[in-house]
Image (cartoon, rainbow, N blue to C red):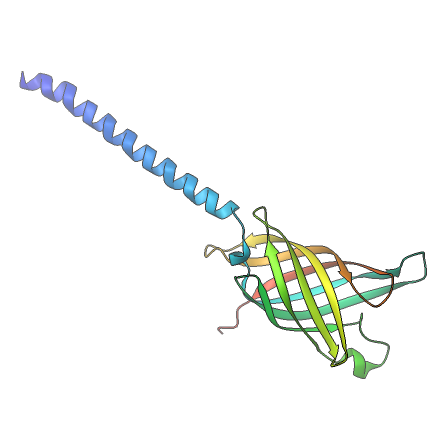
Length: 179
């Protein structure tokens, strides 16, 4: 009779424990999968550097002009951009003293669950002149900590005081300022 217990009960216990373990592992894997694919404002947190290039064109075929921008900003993980600084040919002329001038900006961003995002920023050209811009971008890589390591973007709309379009490609990368 003791042999029967070993032959029947022990394998049943092993199978039951295996099934429970598999269910726990599957449940944990699903939870991890959902959290990694559920993007949000929390994914953009820290200091980021960016560069952009593209064209500006007036509606109706007025003119086309190349443009570039480089800069950095801080994101708080809650939808706010602060301490932004950019250098931009968009706001300058051929005068090197104007090109070499940094422009400050701040604003807000919203990251959608699929990683697409939109930001609205206000660039301060001088105390009497500000420019509003909407930027569209996509989070392209996230570290193990859930924080975006980089983003890419496309079209940007800027209110330049007239009928202008602004198409550009921009790249952004998280900066490690702890070193």
